Length: 132
Length: 130
Image 1 (cartoon, rainbow over the protein chains, first blue to last red):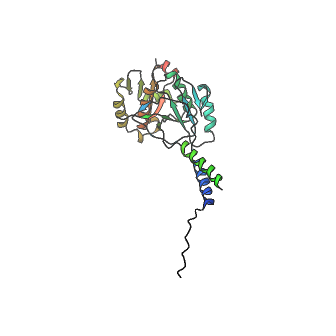
Image 2: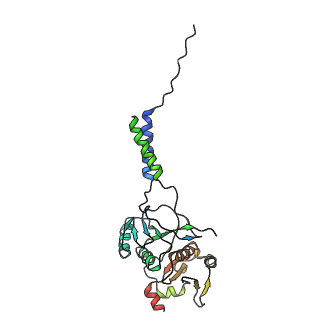
Image 3: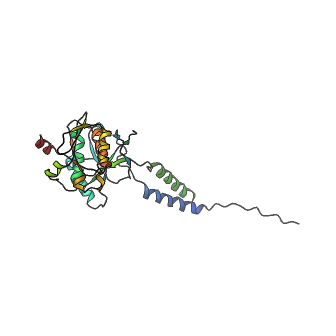
């Protein structure tokens, strides 16, 4: 009599699935950059001289109505210099992401850029690539 | 263990959806490291005057000439600013009052791409010059 072969059962180790899942969560939590100004809609300016830039931690936004925001919070451009200086004090990276609406007049965007310059920041002006 | 890994995978899906994989486009602009560049230094550097409808480029001893953005880009790139010291890389930018941000942006990114340092002419300095 030929002994019947036992059917092998495929076992998925479910216990380690949770471990893998949590490792993935930790990875995404550490690499994700939460956009503090994601809800602000801006028409970006276009230029042929832009390249991809890294995601930066400090961001300044000026929306179409001229409201200036630092890290998504309203701020008077007159106090922007002091606020940015404070943020840069403990940071080696002096780059600040600057998103300004393309149609804004000089009296709105000039004080912002001037304040950043006086604070010792390196403004990274955000825009769109224009094909020539 | 079942519901535990369910929650974990839901969290993963949340992070996958909220992570921004698109990198923003832009350009950093260099501004003078000293707080106030001397008037004499500024007088020796080329000046770009941005008016709402035109761009003027001027060098010491020469009059202002009207340039299009492409001509300005070519002129700045031909200057070979990269090999120069910071004071010699400075381009003075004089902005008229009603210039929209996009016009300034196009000029500022062109100067920055050519390794120029942008010195913005302040209101008081503009009044003095006039």
